[in-house]
Image (cartoon, rainbow, N blue to C red; front, side, top):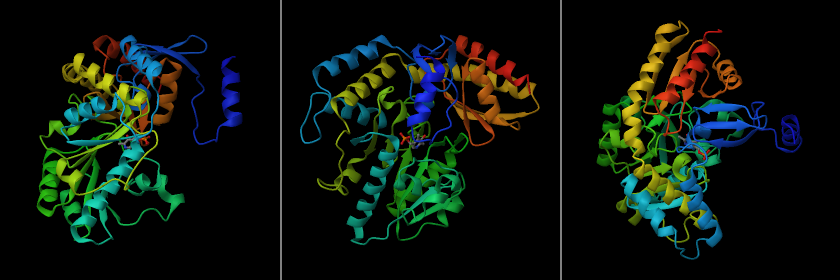
Length: 397
Ligand SMILES: *Cc1c(COP(=O)(O)O)cnc(C)c1O
């Protein structure tokens, strides 16, 4: 089939919920994607932070192939041979004690919310628990996750959402304190806001939240779905801050492209919250995704990708600074590791579109941030090549 035929088939049959770019990807290798015309695209988006190892990694494929041949699915009524290993891996790298596997990021958020509600319910036997979340946050598209997402345009058509959610200002501790009351069961935030425009939590702010939560027995839930799994130069971004959350949500790069998420909790939370019958999933943690999680974490550690990201980030930031110095309509950049935003006063959607035409895949975040989430294997040469394309695209504005 030809490009326009693939596109037409999709448009004829898919529920029109995405405005897709007019490109049909066929395969990938290392840092690059290839479309049906054989055109090469350097990837600085990783399928929204998923493809940490780039494309076509043989070792990863081999691990998945082995699992596919043995067993794909069992349900959670039984043990299987890949489950415990993947669970131990997630506990080790998050620093948590127990994990529940989900099929997506949004479902990890749902599980975290239910855990926090049950934890509070067991303290006082009362319902009416409240959650403090943040303005401009993004936690997913299911009704529960949308209820804690602080961005109006995602929410507006769907009221009433889950009640009991209050929104504070990110990096503004006083705005959080003002919302805390006897019903508050959890504070939920992204360690680095992703969709909202790449805003890292300030160290003082996150440490103050940790103290407040400990003092009042409120659960601190950190959403690391986008910023976790090595992206910032630590396995999880909160490890830069030397704090331990009560619940962590993780997904995106967790399965290296196989759809899997998880929420992980401390022993204390696990002991006084969900029990058999409270929560479940048919697919969650099935043999295929567990093989993917185990191999992803294994490769992340073997290749020392967090260390590689730490080492190469200054080079990436230098490149971002060069564009900031060169163009008046580039007003700055911010981020951590391989999660970076370039702040623009020109329409970011046009920049993303023109980059794609020029063979560079990038993302936007909000209306004014060009977002870069390159695969974690990206090195200086890849950045040289990508920024040359980006520079030439920007020079046309
Ligand atoms: C992508 C994302 C989600 C939602 O994950 P899905 O797998 O799309 O449901 C939640 N939180 C953050 C921070 C994300 O970036």
